[in-house]
Image 1 (tube, rainbow, N blue to C red):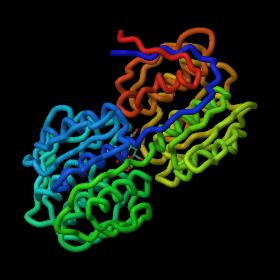
Image 2 (image 1 turned 180 degrees about the horizontal axis):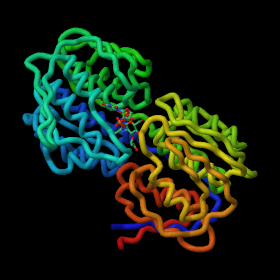
Image 3 (image 1 turned 120 degrees about the horizontal axis):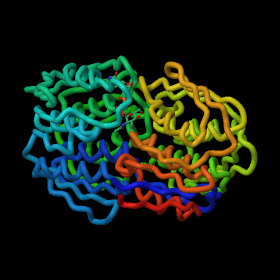
Length: 419
Ligand code: EPZ
């Protein structure tokens, strides 16, 4: 298993270009199943999850081709399978989108139970509630979810919890259904708007994505087309935080600054310079950082996927900060790793109290999920006087394209070893 070796203490300076959003890409690729034709998806991040989903699409009968590193052509008119049971599928969470897509296209779906990061219980009861409301029967047989419906009929669905996955999955099942579906208490993340824009580009009729009420008027058929994925809000936030941790001066480019507002405002509170342009944010941090309090919430609140990275930043501020996790039950597994570099944390329930420290010391750190892995790399950028080794890079590669090349282009000193 490869690992990343980081010689910290370097100020990051320069430009970093952000890729397309992982959480949009991993929903749009399954959604191509609904299209009776060719979808050309541009600005896809070159990451493990995209490669796995490409394999999954091919296992269903789609003809796919990368026309360049970030563009995938998918001809789903040849899809004949409604069973997505390949081993790779249960490795990732977003495979659950194949249920909504296959159900929408064929009226039946058999998909391996989704995997993904371990944040405690991650039920899919709201997905199932939505499919059943549309007229499907859903059964779980061991590690396989089976759903079938003689006919899907639009209806009103109120989500008991604000769920990104359930909002998108119900949208996928509803676009070809008879009549209108209304999703209430829907999630509003930028990647939800992106999936709706993709579907509308293919001929669907989805209104209100990005608000908490989404209306989907079923259509006969979706035809092919070209679509460009939205920039990755979480990758952008990770590099903004990296710039601040190293007291750097970085232009984070190819982003939508509005998507970063919850982070930008917290960084301003800490005394970090935030300059917004049309498609970039410049982050400058040249003085002592002030402590602050953060609570994760569904969009437009502070994203839970920037929680571990923000914990590293708060650990370098002067004073005591707090960080409350309100989206997932248990997302503090990274804390023990950060203590190894000298960070000071106490965690009670879903709240961490973080006392800022001046220095981190190099250590061996072990990634246990995607965003925690990225946070450990950020901690390594701060730790001086030796090498910080981050193990289990497979988690990081699932969602970050060329992380060491991008950091080194900003003046960091990171290298990867195969063993
Ligand atoms: C998506 O996960 C993202 N994954 C996660 O990003 C992200 O952390 C999360 O949304 C929140 O923003 C993808 O897009 C592939 P949820 P998802 O359904 O859909 C509860 C990353 O690092 N819930 O919005 O699984 C659930 O337990 C990953 O990129 C139910 O109770 O999240 C959680 O507490 C990690 N029943 C809350 O809702 C359900 O049926 C939000 O979960 C569904 C969810």
